[in-house]
Every structure is written in structure tokens, then in C-alpha cells.
Length: 555
Image (cartoon, rainbow, N blue to C red; front, top):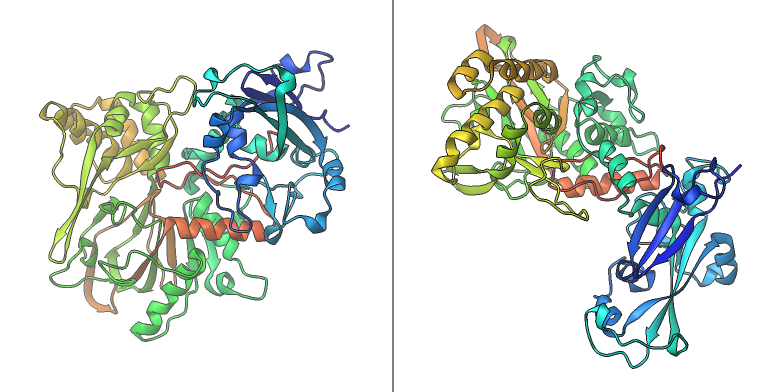
């Protein structure tokens, strides 16, 4: 039996939508704790009306709120209609769009050029997602006559009801409204899926809905995709599997990349994968080039170009927008060599646990800005920001001192720290918080030494150090491996290495970057073309993965 249709109630300037009623409660379903509802402000609905969207560009035409407030526009009539009834009255050939929407649609309409309509994840009659998408909210707006020209809606002149004119109609698919609602239940369920926690790390993730466990090289390691399979153009490409892995797990290995034999062609190997995941472009090539050679050299311009140990860090943290993804192609490895293992740890998951273990120290890293620098010949760059960034609080009682807000970014790059620019009385507090988090991210640090040096509780220091040991993945890459990882979510590093006498070859990696926005956009477009839906965890770029998706556990 299908669930009951949505219900609406008008409350002053708000529309309250009950998306899901409790089917077990007769007559009192709207007040049931199992009901799912959300308030929508009238001006928000007006501003998001499909008529304000330019087709086919998808851009807003302008600020429609000026008209809304000056003309005293209010809700006149509302109705819930089945979408089939709506479409009978509007010939499809005359429409440039449809009111059927998919997971992730930003506008309440779907352009004809992007027709995907409803997802096929559930049966149309009983599946909660598709059932909800079969209904639309119709709002008919009225404009009050002789309205005083006051911007504040409370100051509009009172008019008799029969003086009000219905002049415009807006239509919203219920699935779209549910996705973009600010309901408490919606917010908490989506946050649980989006906010990176230990359960999201590939180190302890044995099974995943979208990624095949058997494609992992080892039970704790990243998903592996063959180089040629990722680049196929015959409809059997595993590029989407690769993108799934780097967005859901944070990292992947592309294996069996060919050895070309000369520098120009070798650079093309990592370029091909980078362009494939980002829709055709590499990024951040100003300092080191579009591709760069990671091998030990004299007078190195970067510590990575030495045999020295490289602690866990993010690249280019001194940029306003650091690279979203990094690729490191292992071209060759010295044999025999001691050390040189590549390492990864999920810093956003670590921050999530750090908040629980040491809330006061966590708050310090949220409130005290660090200085990230690149200062050498040919480069003079600085950027100030806190190590941990929380999502702005848009709740009814917004509180920016609330440390339980969603973690949306972590900035960590010890080799590129510059002078602190905080009050001298805050330096000691910052140093302690920094050291504690460093213990959690770098499994080479000694808990006892840090406890004594910074006054960190010994039990806490031990717990943090144990976390680093448990969640750090390390492996010597094989020639032909390309490690692809989210540079805003994952810290990467390298064990120091020593070349033995009689060594053959050299340890040589080739690197490249892609833009976080280009890569995310390409991933979403490919998902849409494949008719698939994902709740994408936060990617660490300072915002939530805004385009929502209805969870299986929700409507």
C-alpha cells in the first residue's frame, strides 16, 4: 500500500509541508513523531519559482524579492496535485522543462536537454522517493491592491480579501522540496551521511554500497582500478568506479599504467588520468608545472625532491583554493631501497574524533588562525586560516560558538607553516592544541615526549597516538601505480629512504593536480548520465556537499 500523499498547512508567511505521515496512526498522523515535515518561508518559495530561472542556461534572472516585498505579494491559494494531472493540462511538446525532478536538482524544474526525470531506485507505486516525486505543490500568488510601498512585510496595508488578485502560479515537485528542506530530521540524517568520520575511512571500511570490496589491493587499502579500464571509451569504462572511490573513500590506486620510456610520454600517463577525472583539465601548474617530477635532486626547491622523510600534509595549503585532487604516478623505484613508503591518513575523520576526545583543544584549532607560506625564489605566498573549519550555523538560534557544527575543512601542512598572527596570550594554548592534533595525524610522533613538552594529559596523548597508528595507511608504490587522492581531505607523506650500494634505477614519481570544483562537477555529471545517485561525503573544500540526496532511510 503506497504511503499517504503529502499534506500542507499555511502558517502566516510559511508553508508547512508534511512529506511523510505515520501510516500506523489514524487521524493523528500529522502530530506523530514519525511524521517528516518542514517549514518553507513564502519569500524563499517565491525566489525559487521556476519562472525566475532562465532556460536553458539555468541562471537566475534577477532578484525577484524586490517585487515580492514592494508589491505585497502573499500566498493566495495552495494545492497538492498529482503530476499526471498537472501534465494533462500542460502539453509536453510546449514545455521546455519538466516538473519531474531528480536527486540533486538545484532548480525545481528539469530542462529538456537534461531529461532524466525520476530516479529508478524504487518502484513508482511503493518506493518512497518516487512516490513523493509524483506530487507537486501548487502556489497561486496574490498581489495586494493599493499596497503602501514598504519593504517590511509587516507594514503592508490591510486590504479586504476580495481586493486581492491571483496573478501568478508556482509549481514545486515534492521530491525537490524534501531535498532542499531545512527540517531537523533532514539535516541530521544528511549530516550523518556527509560529515567525514572514522566510518568513512578506507582503512577500516570493508564493504561499501558503491565500491566493490574485491577491487581493493588489501583489506585496508584503497580501491584499485586498472589504467586502461579507467580510460576506455566503449561503454565499459571504470572511470565512474574511480571517481566513486576518490569521493567516497578519499583515495584510489590506478594500476598497470604503462612505462613509455621518455619524459614527455611518461608525463602524458598521469595527465590522461588527471584530465579524465576532472573533465579535461589539470590545475595549479604555476609553481611546479602541470606535471612535476618527484625525485631526489641537489639544491631541491621542495623537501619532496629529497630522500628526507615527508610528514603528513596537504599540498599548496598557502593557496586560497588548494588543489582538490593530487595524482602521483610511480614511474620507477630504486632496487634495493630501504624506506620510501607512501602514506595517507584522513584528516577530516581525525578532526571528527578529535572533537570528541579533546573538545577544548578542538575549539582552539577552530578559533586560532594559522599562517601558511611559500617563500623562496620565485614564490612569495601567504594565507591565514584556522586548521579546522566548521559550517556556518543557519539554525533558528544560530550560534557560531557552537563547536558541534559540521566539519567542512581541515588545513594541515607542517612544512609550510609561517609565523602565527595571534595574541601572545593565545600562543601557548595554540601550541598545545596543534601538538595534540599532530599526534593524531603523524604516527612517528612520541606520545610521552609530546605529553611532557606540551602538558597534554598522558592518557589523551596515548589515545591520539594510537589513532594515528590505527588509521595511517602506508605502502611502497609499485612501478605503474598512480595514487589518486583528495588533497583537501587526505594528508599524504613519505617515509625517508636510503639507497643501498649497487642500486639500480631511481625512485621517481610524476605528479599532477586537479581542481576540486572541476572534478566534483564532472563526477556529478557522469552520475546523472548513468542515472545514479550518491550522498557524497564532504570533500573538505569549506562547504558541505550542498546538492542533497534523499537517503534510503528517508522519504
